[in-house]
Length: 172
Image (cartoon, rainbow, N blue to C red; front, side, top):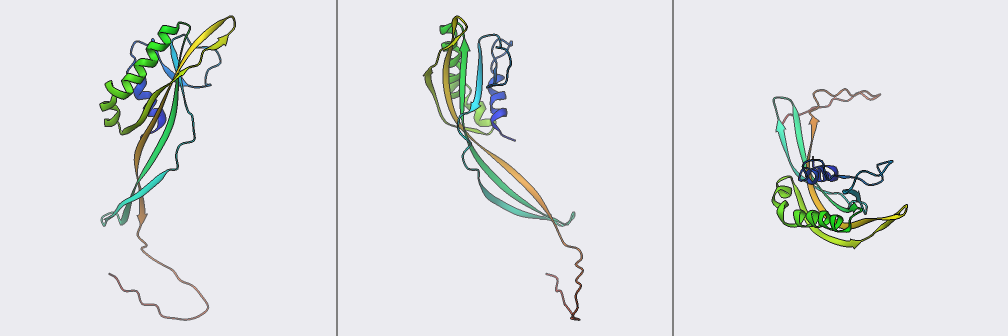
């Protein structure tokens, strides 16, 4: 199932050797070794829209299968950190170029659409006596998830009441 965290996992798979990783923002007690990036959904995901994709009957198992396709959009803020300004910029650029161009086909195959991807600027943060350099890349992705539910047939109905009445049920 497509989600923001699986999108981030896809991005992390592009950086081998453990020298760079993208981790959830505000998820660490001590500062990871640099360079690294954090991610967070910068705005609430858009309203989830869906459409019914049809209904099929499974007569063998006595169920009706309902299918729906849910569409979601997420605004993800990626912040790349390093004590070295050039290194932070280089990894931010790798993310930007990778998402927009190099890895785009693989991202699409995984079920994501890239609505936009842009560098939002530099946000150095003072940490103790030195600055931790930070470059921000904002990405808007969309994804679909198909969901199914089974609706069982009624096999038997018991009616009770005070009034005697005959009920005839026709099949078909």
